[in-house]
Length: 336
Ligand code: DAH
View 1: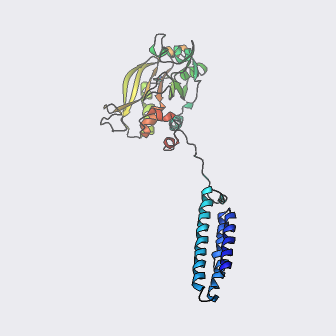
View 2: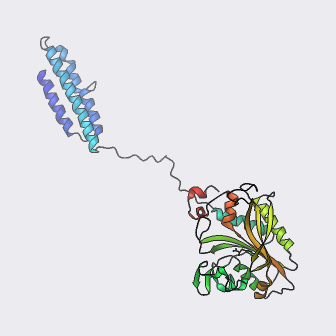
């Protein structure tokens, strides 16, 4: 009996040393220590051995059982630590996939579409012009004299001495009038470029230009159309004020303010405590501009206006940093 036990112990320990996989350890354990295991079977027979040696054999059997159990646990840790015998990674094909982040219409485009849609419904045609523009259309034909500060190298990106990146969308007015006899009514969105960059300026931004020319167009028409636009864009209760201003291509000229959307006119940081926010420039087309496109200044009159899109988007959505529009942060973009 004693011999049988010792032989079994050696056999078990030999076998255990050869194991390389954790799952094989489990079957090994069952084969020796399980209910029907080899050691268990031997131990059941201890009762049949002579009573004088029975306690000794019992103790031996228990020691062997403990030795094998300990060896099993050591082997298990050894295999796990070596990283071997790991089960192959299971891929659960029923799990839902990771969805790629969806694109989103940029808030600048949303505002451009909205502005163009409002004016389209009032009969204006949406039109575009080139970003790379001749000095003639950007300045000359718009009555911007040679010594005008906007023509300075400091403020304008020059491609060559007579080609610039357009500094505003106003040249589109000239391009349209040159090709089309009156009446014209256009709304023209696009990118514009200026050598400017800080918290409230970016070297590229967007504008929308408007122009209406016909017989007997008056300043009253300008006020009516722009008021209708602002009421649709910012709400029908929005208070508006027309303030005299100057632009070389309009006479008279006016800047249009709306009551501050943040503080409702009480005065805050956004409106510099004035209660008002400037949102566009406008005026009656200067006869000098008509002359450059051969429009009869006795027969026709018209109004024009231009607005910065980022500025309108900032006011409409309460955004306080213009740079956010150009970072393409999906968290920012999906808010609108
Ligand atoms: N072009 C002007 C600018 O960039 C905005 C502007 C003012 C456009 C008055 C107009 C206008 O058509 O009539 O600041």
